[in-house]
Length: 283
Image 1 (cartoon, rainbow, N blue to C red):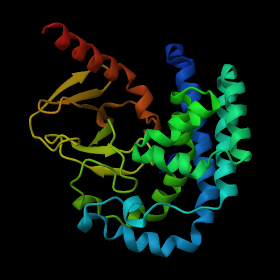
Image 2 (image 1 turned 180 degrees about the horizontal axis):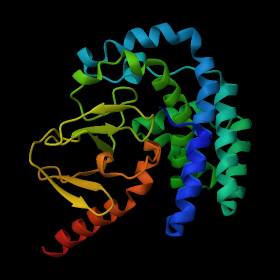
Image 3 (image 1 turned 180 degrees about the vertical axis):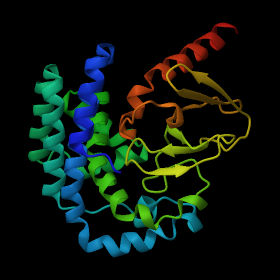
């Protein structure tokens, strides 16, 4: 069953009561994801006239070895929809990070005055092109990391909506790539169910099976793994050096929304980082 905004918030609150060390990061992350899901429902309605086209293109994803977003050439929405998403995302950030209120107000006012286009900011963020975001940040005197984060959060509801529309038309069992078949993003997060490994996109939420012996980043089979306390697995590629983390659902005592996996696997990131630092100190 797909995670709902209410279930994300409820389970996050329960986890916080059981483990306060998860702290503000989990509360913020869960609340932001819930907001993104709520916004995606509105975006999905906007995309309804294009639904048949997206679904047809989704059937070509595996054959073309290209993401749906790439095949579609992006997602077109009215400017006022992009503006509404940007405002909602900024408002949610301010609820948790009051110290960012002034910067976010500056960003919103600049968008309303036409100093930058929220759609372009989001579009270039998914492509990894920092030039547009850098121009916005420098022009407004804002922190580039903040602008990049807001750009990606603004894009997420759109990509989640695209995933909801077309996920069943993608032949995921035949998808052998490491990047997401919907939005083209790479992910460090996956899960194991009934002995089979899957990757889960941290941007749109798409899930697809992926061999545990193959690096999703470079395709190498020079892969090692180790178990981490808590029911986690850490995989690392011996060629490109990238790592990814897998939640072993078969060992979990209770269900946790998969959208929260990037946060609950922070201990795996810490182990991976420590391993990197240890390797670097040996040279």
